[in-house]
Amino acid sequence: MIFTTREDIEAPIDFVFAQISDFAGLERSILRRGAEVQRKVDRIPHAAGMVWDAAFDLRGKRREMEVTLVTFESPSAMCFEAASKSLNGDLSVDLVALSRGRTRLSMSGELKPQNLSARLLVQSLKLARGNMSKRFEMRVASYAKDIEDKYTRRA
Image (cartoon, rainbow, N blue to C red; front, side, top):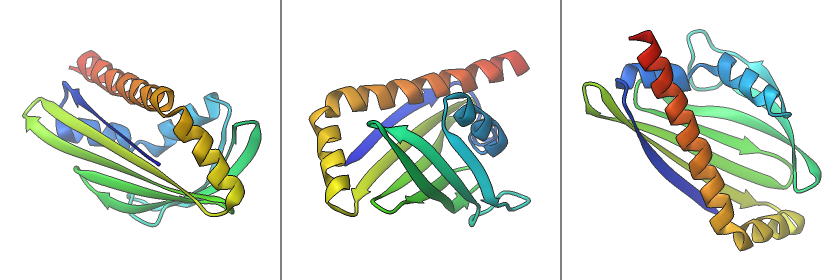
């Protein structure tokens, strides 16, 4: 199951990349939403190979995943891989400079079931695909708007 969306942000690509690669801020945001996240492997400066343990509730069940940053190409791309016992996933984030002060953010995520129970979970998500896609797009749009607001407050 694949989710994709893109948003145009009124901010330079370097600023947008700095915001989406602010892993400490993203970890705090995830914790506020009720999930658990802990960095296992850190790289200073940020680079591929960073690893997080994450735990969250999905469809009434606690899910635990290990998330790895597999690609980190400043200021244009990041790719993450998530792995658990029953479900794997990929998330890619791409940035394209449309002009000096405008950036296109593209996000694509894919869920890959590894066993029968995960296939049932993904199948139930597919049945609600329209609603799930809309929620994904709204969440990314809200995130893009937050980045824009930070840039305008800074300027």
